[in-house]
Length: 595
Image 1: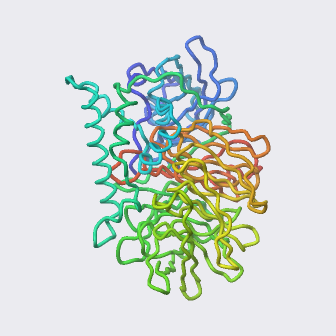
Image 2 (image 1 turned 180 degrees about the vertical axis):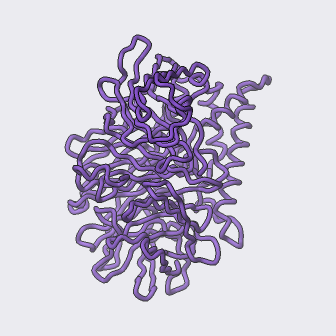
Image 3 (image 1 turned 90 degrees about the vertical axis):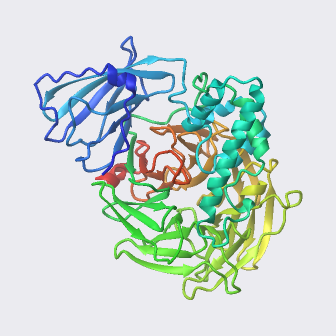
């Protein structure tokens, strides 16, 4: 299996020092326990530092494992690692405001290694801070929201590749640097639109769809002007970024990352079955990857469709099945993970209307939920509609959402969808116009409509609690809406710790009674506590960690997500991941998913 690559920075490699007191072989034949301490130059222990290791090819399990230090700076990997190169274990520590200086290790047995990692303070955070950190340069909130909504749909901005391009622009000596910058960024905008058109046109014999129905940078000159105005320098120096909320990681927090090798565009992931299997959707093919959590072994299964489908949104069935909504108009698919057998339903209505399904209806358990008649409801991004399909006979119908006053003609894009506990109402978000509302399943009528102050606030993937409190992530404005669907009353709107984080999806945790927030631009998962109205942060182990969804394994309570950079030409990690927050909320089952 191909590994993601080394995590150890070049400076750390150059001064790597390791001493094995008992003269161990260069490659350990037995599985090795790794513990250690992270300290600063004065020997002071550093708490809540990330420590990651890229596991050898022969190791059964995750490709990369990450833990965090406790109050005494100590860390411990909960799984032993086999096939480890004792002379060069690929260890790396990350911490905001620090850089790794060196690593030393000692061992008093052939199966245990104690590591000391030394870090030093640095004022330059460019190597660790997320892409969102650079967006603090955009002081106008409306401008930043428009920029995020236009530019972070496929990959992070400004990613490392974007900053490298900025450095090239800054190095050019021209008489009119301002004009040169704007023209240079406009060229990139045109290129992004080309890739977007290619991606969305793959399944269309008539070519790319209308720009408003794709990840398309519409106001190209405005976006280029924003980049030229705020990204003027080489973008290799950054200071002053803070997470904006407490880190909620402990010495028991554990992140496992599984790379899907080869060219792909991994979109979403979900964990099902026993033994636990990660199912990862590749939107660039018709392929679902099955990753054995314990061994790391991978297989793939193609969605049966003659043409482009691009598995996209994943939903867990109450019976343990996996439901897949397509990226392109094709089929809704249901996979029996045990029998490896498929059922499919065409995405076309009885009237012949072609559907662009985004989400299928689900409730507070984040499981597929039908209405009282057994109908599955969905959001239709193509037609700005909600609709249903009858899984018994394939009958389908859609209901077009009414126009929102003052927001007409701006690409409504009906997007996220949840169902209330009485199974009589669905609530939806409209990404393009800053709106959300409800639809009465019994009367087949649209009811409540909420128009947010900012058209570019960007409500995306919703969630709902067991008390029918709905949470709406505002992708553009970097906020979270709390809304009582029973009383049709907004309870609050809260700024995220980083308003440039681009919150893409939220999921209710029925055991912890919190909301987990997947961000696209901040390399972080946020936790929102409705009781205290406070946030916590779990930083991801790498940059480019664009998250579009987050699921909670109902048995173990671990969080499941994936790094979802698209299109496949975009640089970025292609991984599914499991995050154990380390809070013990699900008791002794917490680590069961990986054992």
